[in-house]
Length: 170
Image (cartoon, rainbow, N blue to C red; front, side, top):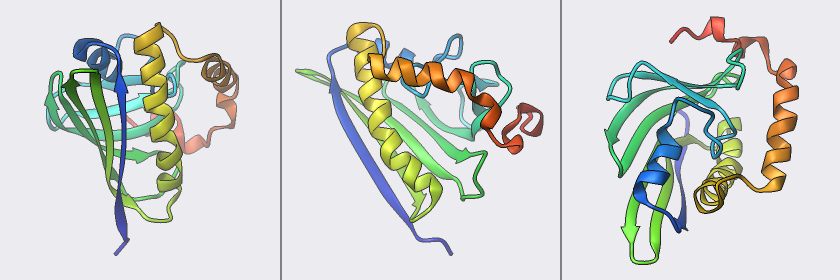
């Protein structure tokens, strides 16, 4: 059996619960905080399948199922990178209104220790929260993140064939 751990990342954002919730759950445009990926789902209800796809929709980066959906405070889904054979983990976004802003927690449970997923999520969770903060507070990601996303949009051809959308029906 694979050893797992829990990863908890938090940030306080000067914005409304509704604005932060929208950024984390929107499916009508790229999610700037989440690597500019598009959320595709049948519905945001428990049991529904979800995917995070590249901008042009050619590749599926993440697959999962909605576990909990309690607007605007809690969104939980299973999570597995399509390019790795790692076991799935569970991602939770928790939003709590504080006097000084909204505390956003990004929690990853059942994260396989030493896996590629663990490595990606350890660095990625901080980037996601910092980018979410920038988007909500300023209206856009930082310049460095925008440059990185522009590079990503030109480099889709290097993604493994196993990530192609035809292999991951919704």
